[in-house]
Image (cartoon, rainbow over all chains, first blue to last red; front, side):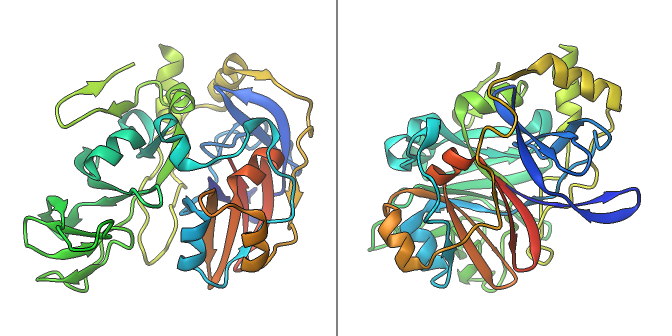
Length: 230
Length: 114
């Protein structure tokens, strides 16, 4: 998760620095800011104790992707390669641990988690996470999941896999207009809606059991008509 | 159940961001009182390790793609962030060791955590 460190403190834009509190709140670590020593939930970016309690850090759009994919997306990228590795959480190799992960979409009681193993079977899920109609997609080659709004203007689209000669194609097709879309950039590349872009929604890969601790009322998606409630 | 309701309310922030602004405006924050937030925090938290036990990084030295290729397996996950023409990758295996990073990307001060 990536957050902005800029918040308003006493009416002034302030840049905070964070340290690690060493405390777990519902299985998510707590961090503190060095200015006020307020305690923040690092998963949600919300200050829960101290003078800044109630302040929310801006969530910034970030990606969780394989290294080989990221460097092709951003050939000039810098990488944190010389720091310590491992620790108690071990090495994360997505395709070996897909059953532990899901893509979290939305916030609060409406939040939903889309398990990676289900996404790998379906590749494309058309669903609703209020207030949005969403399409959730996964790239099975790079284990990268994304969520977009299915609305373009007033029109709600329904997506299906785009049959292509090349396996692992990034293309999806909306049945509504027949437009072909790039499933990762959300851009329409051919058809009536060419040039339009789907609105990406904040979505973050989570470990399923950690997600359930924070989103007690959230829904783990199991299919179009069945949901797993807590 | 009361705690669940509080969590639900405090997590009710804006979820969508536009391509134009590129980030979430989470200014709608919490409508829960500070007292209730602190109460929920105390009820749901415990000390796992000492304060500052993790070696948090501040503006860490970043390597090139070639450095990354030597240190990171191709199929390892990284947290990728790009802003103002600058892109950075934080391998999750590294995040598990340091837990928290204070950095600046494209002029924007950010925190990265896993």
